[in-house]
Image (cartoon, rainbow, N blue to C red):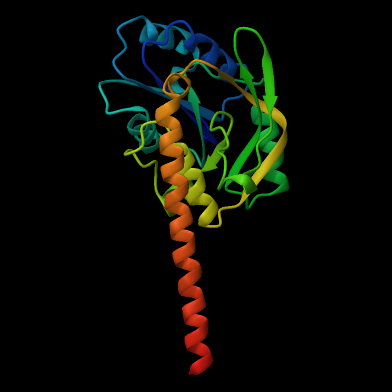
Length: 241
């Protein structure tokens, strides 16, 4: 196996109806500089069998872990610990990439090699329609950027920490806000990179997700106010010295 540039981490639980499309979208990138790490929550259907069958030809670049865990972000952190690449992307087991996703990321890294989070447009898909959504990292204090199709530098996780598992649905928002306030460099790509299927965990438990979002926003607003106050106090002290 050659050098690994990208790690795809896919968390699954009883995903036999959708995970095949997710895997196909990665394999169809037509390259060999990635690995795929599956963190399965002990599925009772044929999810693991489908994973093994679909990835047989790239088995040297695949890690499959199927065991009980304590939730989505616990599993994502577990996948992160197993990954080896400098760039990490998390996909839900019903998401799928656009065919040129890695080509677009390659180009963006050349344009801005100092960026730590690359993301693009995303298609939100339900049974009736597809809606293309653009999000802005500068608006993170008010709204999240979707994690499917987002590529994050491993070094950023090492610098600011992994996902906070006390959140059940919005730990990705907590991570992106943490990155925002820690001055991580974001880069937005003006192309669709991934497709998000409506109906997953965050859709089904929207009320809990909204409560977590409000809690996270309040936490960072308070921390930001404290930091500003300390800076003003230090500046005042220096004027009197």
